[in-house]
Length: 485
Ligand code: FAD
Ligand code: MLT
Ligand code: ZN
Image (cartoon, rainbow, N blue to C red; front, side, top):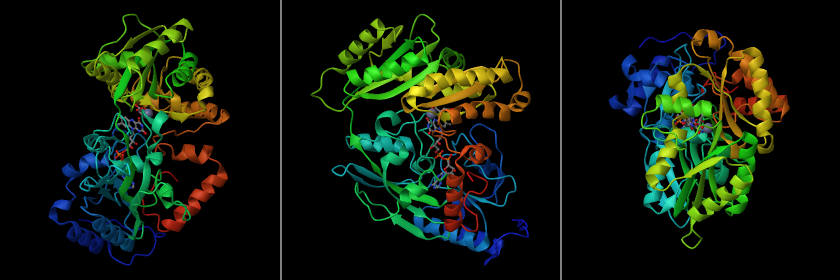
């Protein structure tokens, strides 16, 4: 394998690159690494196909000790490391840079459930566990792990924690951060930080777990985590509702929370433009309502008790008053689990529908819930000044104030022409976000996509503090370089 030259200002090496790579090969054995272009390809390109990187090798350790030994070797030879889970990042966070100096460290082989404690309501999992497998394990033990994203069949818990993933149940259970009690991690010098406690109370100094969560692999590698579990739902009901506006959707949410005893688990907004894309591109999908409407909400109620009243009746009562108050124009309540899944299939395929439709620019933003309807319209005015033909596909987690304010290229406009306007669109949308006290990244993270935006919009003192933390933990700048800051 050819060694790539170091730059003049690179930190001093204690080990040659060749010696470090040979050591890594010995640590993981012949089946634990590859440098074959074919085998590496899925690890070098992002889900959206926007970034194509290069790497010296993809290494797949089987244990925390292996990760520690690999990171130590890389630190000694100044080899950058890109930690990778399911590689489903929507902002290029898990793709190596084009210079080819890094290795990709894929956690996929570390997929053991180490412990499940039903009384403590916790599950201890390795970083490479698929999110969906953790959900299943919890259900098998009559417990519930509520983190839920459309990518749950491919993303891994280490990636979920490293991005502080949100998803459709944040409204009730919080982001990935709120669902973690402890983590084990390998720091950039190779030391193992053992914070695998299942404690709900622990005030012994700085919260290092919270530092690593959401760090997108720039401060170390999460190798395992203790996660919170909840009582298994006894009933879940979904309604697909046509609403007159986003403002009405926000009022419907308040109404539903109050009337259900705060049993709303998910509350997802989507415009007709998006539903049309999903119906056009995703097989086995159908509009649940007979007439066309401009805006929709998919709402889930959940119950964890057999003693509370019938959830279906509660849903009907909520929708009946909402209909009288003009908050809902039409609605379908799922009458079976299959129908509920059919409603959710529409929501879970929104990203795929957009991908198949053609080029789109993503804005994963948040504002206070009360400001979301105003934001939707204000930002669209700004966007239309740049291109009146652009298609707004703004949807998402309204209950969290989080919109995926995505812009789809006008029909017939090619990717190159459309993406030439990216910076203008980003500034138009993000300026309105900033004015409203919002965030330019609600749940996807910064990665490569939003690095410049972060530098522009983040509070300068916050940025300096982030830089100080990065320099203290990773002085050689080897952990996921080119991402976040
Ligand atoms: P990767 O993409 O592999 O990595 C993401 C980041 O975490 C990178 O910076 C990587 O270096 C770092 N990383 C990965 N593993 C580790 C580790 N063990 N230690 C340290 N750093 C690590 N996101 C949401 O929040 N909400 C959604 O609703 C949502 N929906 C999605 C729908 C689709 C169809 C797709 C494709 C993506 C969606 N995402 C969503 C984005 C993505 O799935 C999440 O960000 C997810 O948490 C990433 O997990 P992953 O295992 O794929 O991580
Ligand atoms: C989702 O909620 O479906 C994704 O986070 C949105 C996206 O792909 O932009
Ligand atoms: Zn989302």
